[in-house]
Image (cartoon, rainbow, N blue to C red; front, side):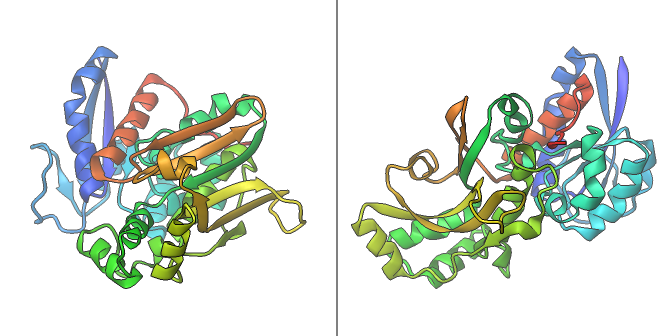
Length: 325
């Protein structure tokens, strides 16, 4: 049986669930003839109590990376993970990540490794709901027309609470108390998290070099309870919508226009029905028609399911997610 050594960076909710899911899926690894060994997990505080399988080395150093065939990055941030991962990628080894901010903002460094098939990042958009895989494979046979998506659970929660009569400030405070929103919450409510995800998707259907700076971003902070109520009275709902479509103006990136902004949509729109309290995307292609993807877009085990799925692809010899050339 072949042995593959895995390293994990980060042991927050997602990192812990990745380690637990690897343990739970050992029978699948056995079925394909692979023994998966976790060499270590990088953490900030080695004394913090964690819910992970026993026997795994927990360390605040990266010395275990040299013995790893593949690394799973679940630490978040941009510059620190890049500092750790770049030398590893240069050695032609593979990385699995859910880090949409890193992918969106440091693509100039990462693109060559993605083109080589060494980057796996299904979980970077909509977590465990697979959209990167289809967009990077079968959907390329269809001429891309447009996509619309709801990609941030925090904004979804806040807008739903406002539909129930709560002011924005109260809904935001509740989201923070429940752990749905960071403090400060700008990345979510300002639309930047959604813009990161839209940038990643654009590289599979519009331009393989699509830059994060080309996304026009407006958050939900300016929405009032009166706005929400007016929409409801007209049979509509507000959603923070990511949209990518052909641009009629020369201002679009390579002929494409990417926006993130609150939009009033009919209550019957797929982003309001299929995506009622979940992430959702409507993908339009000339040949494939209109496709709807909807499901969990956040959460530890939901995200871990996609990351361990990427690990299985790696073990089976499938390349990572290759952007448009």
